[in-house]
Length: 112
Length: 112
Image (tube, rainbow over all chains, first blue to last red; front, top):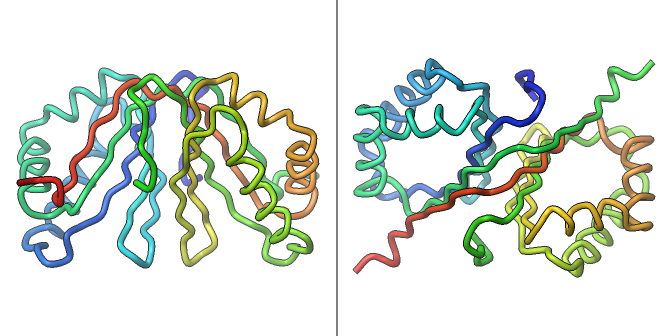
């Protein structure tokens, strides 16, 4: 809820992931760098993210359009981070690219 | 990761929500009932869900198609649950209906 969404359509990248706790050398620094670099990319809108007690992470990244997502996926630094993620850091991940067609909400503090 | 997704396209309902901690009479029973009833609906595929220490919940519900989502939204028992949620239980929520266009994943335990 920490950012203002535009009117649909826009895009969401839904990421369910779990780190491999035994092999996290370099992960924290790369995660920080990718967070900073990712926020600077054209079309990036914001994110929702939660991590459970068991290490399962559920993150939704929001983008203006599908082209912004493809461009970020091909960014050279991000490609290297993806390679290290598969080779070392992640036990598993599942990523979905989705087009948001409708959105609505409610906030009690906005009621009069 | 607890269910097998079909090949895209399929649908995701992304729900970011926070309960109003001061006003949860009847919520637990209704949440349980809606979970059970929701799983029985035509087109329901599965869910990913996490709740943070601050009470923020991030849930993604998956469906075969948009019609399944609309039908569940209009289910009489679910309509009553939605009304009580707005009147009593939720501090805020934000709901997005999105069409999953692409999906891919990685699981270290599947590597040889």
